Amino acid sequence: MIEIRNIHKSFNEKTVIDDVSATFEAAKCNLIIGASGSGKTVLMKCIVGLFEPDNGDILYNNENFTKMPESGRKELRQKIGMLFQGSALFDSMTVEQNVMFPLDMFTKLSTSQKQKKVNEVLERVNLKDANKKFPSEISGGMKKRVGIARAIVLNPQYLFCDEPNSGLDPKTSLVIDRLIKEITTEFNMTTIVNTHDMNSVMEIGDKIIFMYQGKKEWEGSNQDIIFSKNDNLNNFIFASEFLQDAKDMRMLELKGKIKENRNMDDLTQ
Amino acid sequence: MNFFTHLGRFLLMIKQMITKPENWKLYWKELMHQCVEIGIRSVGIVAVISIFLGAVTTVQTAYQLVSPVIPRTVIAVIVRDNIILELAPTLTCVVLAGVVGSRIASELGNMRISEQIDALKIMGINTKAYLIMPKILAALIVVPCLVILAAVLGIWGGQVAGGISGILPFETFYQGLLEDFIPYNVFFALTKSYTYAFIISSIPAYYGYYVEGGSLEIGRAGTKSVIVSCILILLADYALAALLL
Image (cartoon, rainbow over all chains, first blue to last red; front, side):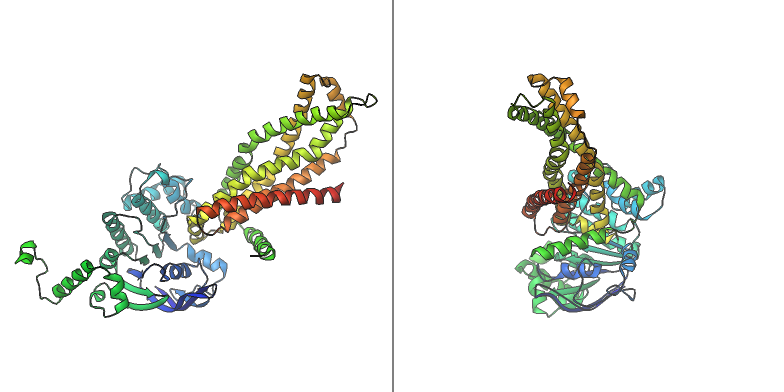
């Protein structure tokens, strides 16, 4: 479990994160959602220690990360995996070398053991036959999967995904979302995902935190979001008329006013 | 940012990169990789420049020494001392500042912009130690070797140019090379090369590591690092000459 308390972060006197507190639960997909510039990436970078918050505490299983010495942080970081927005794969290394890198750096496994582990992880993310390819030779979706494989190869307790669906088509996004959801349950990880993709919210959002202008505006699950009365959240999530209609339809379904398994004939009657 | 902010951040970077490696084997591998990148890949350009510099120095020295009372061996003495004291260390390193410096700055800048440095940091790796220290150490190892190579090839180029153009025969040149040789000059050249090696690796690493923005800024960081490195090389050149000669 990760808990953040009263996080505040500003850059050149511009407040980007304003007094945000939240709890991210284990074995669940915790989503931070919000429009571009709402502060979700900065919040995530504060949680993982890439930015130092000006105020507040970050607790990993009740251990205060903000007050930890560098040696303690280093140790904790080996329990953290992160998928970056642009995948952040090392250009000069092949897919296999990218995934093997954390094993090379932090384990004393033999080459064959490392190779076995890499193959297992790549198979887990449905990425076979790409071992010897360079990042420049694979698609965006494959890069994300390599990023996930590299993030989970050391069996981390915490997984962070920054915009895992950016630049991907809806179908590939769904594959990535489901993969994140599956590995979260499988490895019993505390997963935090930054996204503004409505599909991800509905698909994997066990717990959702909505950020608006640097503040936590709303908190709930993907079931609650449909019934939310928060205008800022509704304006963000159901921005188009199409999505608003879809939401209304879903609300009627959940209230039992229309059949859930209806077909086109039902709709045209 | 003013000069002192840059200086403070640079010194902090140097301090923070000196830590115990997380994995000696991987650091060693990275050091060897950098030795190849900085050293082996620069041999060609260093060789070409040195040979022609030696040749030009011989021809131009002969052109200026027209007095019949000055023995022809003096040409070789001047070429030798010029190359060892100044041309081999300084000019080679100015060229390396462009070749190696821009590569280091753009490599680190690209890693910063594409979040590869953040990815390493998340894994618990000291990014300054893993990315910058091997580059500086590699430069300290290979740049003096390149300077020695440049000196040897420069003198050889001068000898060949002298012989081919008929300015002075090979034997006379060789005889001149042995005249009044001061071994301290070699020590001085190596002192210079170590100083320049640190400059041409650490300055571009600093500009690349702290780059902010996009691809345009990576280019700017590369240019800035080459300019600053060249200026610092010339400043160090004067300071070392004033102190050690």
